[in-house]
Image (cartoon, rainbow, N blue to C red; front, side, top):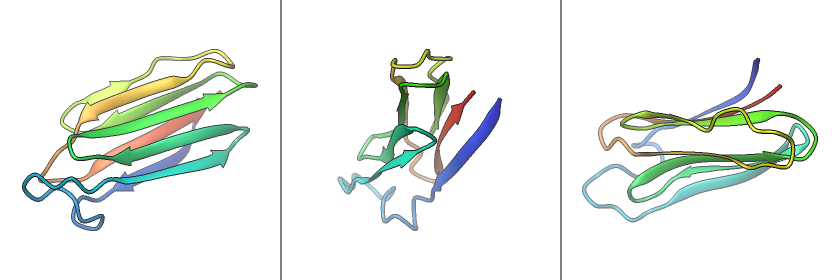
Length: 96
């Protein structure tokens, strides 16, 4: 297993995490032969990764750690967690 990308979403840096902010910070990246969508919304942190050629997974860490499990090529890996207001939220994907 090889961790390909770590994206640390720092609440203060992304202007979220104060009160009931509805600002969403998200990105979609085409990498390692697949598509990774990740971000932090008003309530959740998420990591979604899909790859048609390789086994893969995704992880989101907020108040809890959510792991998608290992997915076959062509099956989307979905992970989300309620976000932390006071500390950073993290999103990862892996390909195998």
